[in-house]
Image 1: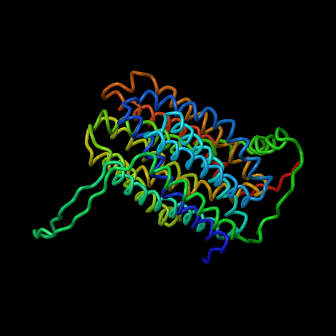
Image 2: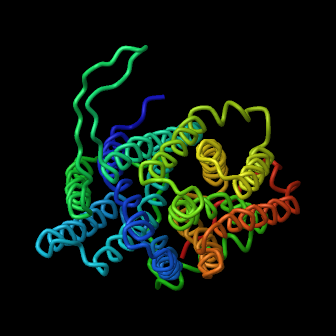
Length: 430
């Protein structure tokens, strides 16, 4: 299919800003776990950020449904870019970025993603025809993970640095001089901030005609928030599906931000390069899922396919919990990428077909808040000093497997109603 110019411009802006953003979000957790040697501070920062995002996520959904998505992209990109440039300038002036500025950057980027990605998918639903939802979702996942592959590779170079004089090719030594000094957080934040403003320039050029009718809702914020929760209450099977199918995503975010840097440092005794390369392997797996997951499960119901991917995730989490091997962890990251991205593509397409566009932002926000509550619970448990000492981090992977298994059992209770080919009727808006 030919993607609308509006969607292509938005994707291009996402590629440009996403590359630098990915490096920042890898650099910050590693800085806490390795440079500051304070995994407990990382756990506290992550948990507090999640607590705030529980409230922000709900409000973000009302903004997505009330205001033009183009304006949302512009304003939040301007805010995010400005904060990054301020943090960078502070670092250059003082010689090091203050801890409180690092926390602000981490929190702001997290909240930016909380509204950006739901708005991106809502925008895609708005400008594309229903027959193209699956292809568009797969494409969005592919480009998102391709960005992660590149940003993870670049992060490995920038965080650790490179000093090469030659390389071996089929037994022959080829002179090749490459020297990259490890980048400071100030430099990383500066690059990230500039890309946000480039993204704004591209978004300003977007012009489009919606394929879905836009409903202008008055009402208070509370009244508009109730629309999303009321919709899910009227469709309990959809509620169970929406929450349980996010369980892999819940574990992925907890793993990437909180567990992976500690597992790499404490359990594998590995370097920043290994840490960043794990993100690359994860993204390659996710990239393959975006390309072929719909084809792989084309003869199977979406719900059954997601349950299979959840079972696979349980298996790899258990293997990872009780091994100590960098190659095995690379394989784990690769498969984790496949199962998470595959579930996301299938899940979002399912929701597109069953949730009207005028409430998709609030429905997704309601589901995401429930996801955030699960992440808060996991991160609070995993923040206990027991898990942060020595090899005890492996038990977090065991408990993550149990968490996903519980969600599989919950989804199984609504399996029959979920696999039915039904359409959700349009609902009354406030």
